[in-house]
Length: 213
Image (cartoon, rainbow, N blue to C red; front, side):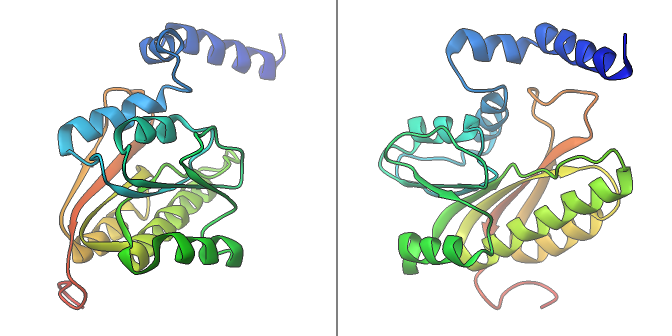
């Protein structure tokens, strides 16, 4: 068996053993990612009926479907270069934050009211070079923090996927200047062997009140 074939076989075996993958199939959810957000929402009460949400890295739509079921009278904007499975009420923007068309659409949708919650499940395309992959992860985390700085209302919350490694401590330090509380958590639905964790930043400080700024 080729190395690639062996790797694919191990991945398939792991998927079949994963209780959250099986649960997603049984309950008709797009992916196991649904349960990561569900577990963080249950712990931190992130999503309400009228929450205005900017979701970055939304494809394939696991988080988006969960948000649609919860924020039924809110606003949901899902941003990703790849296709996102979403209901008609969701604003799906094909592209990346920082692209003129995406930023213009965000301005039109969010306007002066902004967002109550910014979510980022963005991850780099893995090259297998750990230092490069980690740098890509931190770049995306910084992009999410910039989105929170621009669009999040005072008192709003931010959730960002991170991978343990170089740059995380500095990113957390910068985030703590902007928010009243920053926690890093690993939901039960996140695989134990994965370096993945999530930063949950609660209570964006009023403009000009950031410590150290």
